[in-house]
Structure formats: C-alpha cells, structure tokens
Image 1 (cartoon, one colour):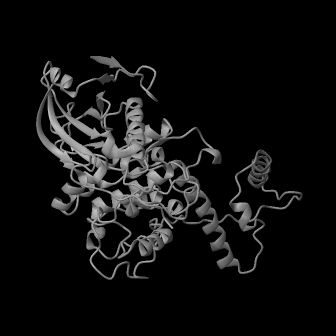
Image 2 (tube, one colour):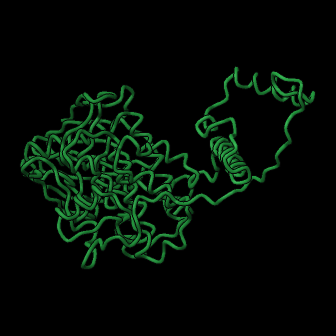
Image 3 (tube, helix red, strand yellow):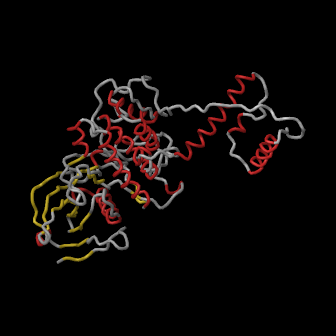
Length: 431
C-alpha cells in the first residue's frame, strides 16, 4: 500500500512525489534495480531503470536506523531543498519513497563522475574549459542565492559531470549535488546570518573559521578555491595540519608564482579569483557579480574606466603644470580634480570659457592666459593581488589532496555525504 506524504519545504507547484510505502518491494513495480554504483556510511546507490519510460536514474537507499536522528534531519532538509529547485546545473530529484526503516531517493544519474576525479586524471583544466565549468557553477549558485539557499559545502567532490540533453557534444555539463549541509535563510540582515561551523576545511571561508556570523558569501569563497584548483591542479591554500591551514586561509594570500601555468592564465581570470577570495565577505563579489565579470562575458565595463581615465588625465595635466611652472598656483587643488562636476561648477566653467573666447579674464578687461596642450597617457592595469609573491612557503611537503581534509559539521556524529560514492566524511566541532 502506498500513501502520498506532504512535501515539507517544497515549492508550491512541486511535482516531486513523496510516497510512503509499507514494503520496499513495492518500488519494483516502477523501477528495475541494476548495479550498485556507490557506497556510503548509511546506505548504497544503485543504477535503476524506470520500467515505463526506460530512463536511467540513480537511486539512493538510506538506512534510517543506521544513520540516526541527526543524519536523517539533514537528509530530510536536503530533500526539501531539492524539491524547491529546478535549474540545469543542479542535481534533480525525481521522486522519493519511504518506509519505516529506509528512504529511497530517485535522482538524476550523472555517469561522468566527480569533478575531483576528472581533475586528478587531467591534472589541470585549460582556461577555456575552466570558464565553461565556472560559468555554469556561477549560474547555479546565483540561482540558489536568489532563493536564499546557501549550499555551504561546495567542493570538487560535490560537482558531478553528466550528459547534456540539450547539447550531446557538451562534455563539461556539471551538476551541483550534496545539499546535506545546505540551509534556507530567512532573509537578509544580521539576524539571518549563519553560525554553524561546517564545511570542508580547504574550502572554508575565513569568517567560518573565525566562528563569525556568515552569509551566502561563503559559497563564493568556495567557488574561488574551485576555480583556482581547476586552473593549476591544486588548491590555493595548503598546509600539513588543519590548524596551519586555517591560519593560512585567514591571511588569504594568493600565490601565482609557484606554478608556471599561471604565466599562461589571463589577468581577467586572476582578477576573478581574487574577487572571490577576498577575506572580508563584505568586499567579496557576489555570485551574480562574478557571473557578469569580464572574464565570463568577455565585455569590459568601460563606463567606470572612462571616468577613471578622465580623472587620471586631469591629474596628469596638473602634474605637468607643476613640473613646468614649479610652484605656480594652479587654482585647483588635487581633491577638486576628483570631485564629480556640479551644475554650479559647470556653469562657472562655461562662463570662464566664454570670457576666454572674448579675450577677457574673469572680473577684468585683460586678455586670457595662454592655452596649454597636454598628452593623455594610458597604462596597463596591474593585477590587484591579495598576496605578495615569494613572501612565504605555503607548505613544506606535497600538498594534501582536496579530499584528505574531511567535511566537518558541528554535530558529534558523522552526518554529511550520506551516500557519497565511496567517500566518507568526519564530523566534529572546532575547539
């Protein structure tokens, strides 16, 4: 016998069924269970085929008794969040079955594996391939943040590769997965900041490490770590112990000198990384902002640059006057050059130009002073790096792999990655 269950936390128009069944054999009416493709601490993952549509799916089978209350709460929260979302680069939940002892999640099948495994095999991704991956990730996370959903455990292991039904030639079609640590915020403001110490150390943002209240900007930091890792094959912050790693992360110094591959990476790509890895979350770019960064769009934002160039030109003009005339007073201090023109100032300047054209000085009948020619110079914009190259050695031994420092949560029992493909995680509270 099967009974429909209410969809806790689901969107109003969610079409994802959540069915209570007495016997798990009831599932066999709809799905043919195939090979086991994954093993977690509390269950298994099977490749299944829907008998009516012949579509392939992944079925996660979680033993609720073995998982325990805390893990089940996280699983229920993950299910609720997956019912709220529908985006091309976020894993899809097809339906849920539940007995008194087990929960069955029928999810999108991603046969391309984890991005972490692909990176280990390739060693690095080209900048063009990295751009394809990161744009899709920015799209997905921007979508989540607009819904007040914060992932909190973004990492290479939680990005899967799958077939793109809209473009079979797309070999870099990613899916963000594992929403076990994700939360739905209540809105904006300090009262809706998060306090839990959780995530995976290599990807943790400084504010989480410092036990400060934090926001969705922790996801942006993690994406900066992911992008850096894809381009050079290792994370930006490395250490032999978690304590050392935390101190290095809090400094936020990015080194582009230790790996020669950075000599081939564009300045726009480096700037994009730096915007995501700003230690102060208030100055860190948002997911939507990096989605519209010049590295992604290929479009330089000229409006602000033109204004900056005009200010620079005026400053250089004044500098040339000082060099030629020595201590001759310019009649306009440096601060006034940086001021935005006001209607009163523009009127005064127009009257001055009119008097000059008539051969008069303001307030007198004399002739105007001689005109001055100046040359506008342009300089290449330097990369604003957060680190000073060569200041320190990040690690005295080979860098640990990204999955060697495990996922942490502030509970006392293992709770995350309930059914990750063969990877277990530890949970503990930071002291």
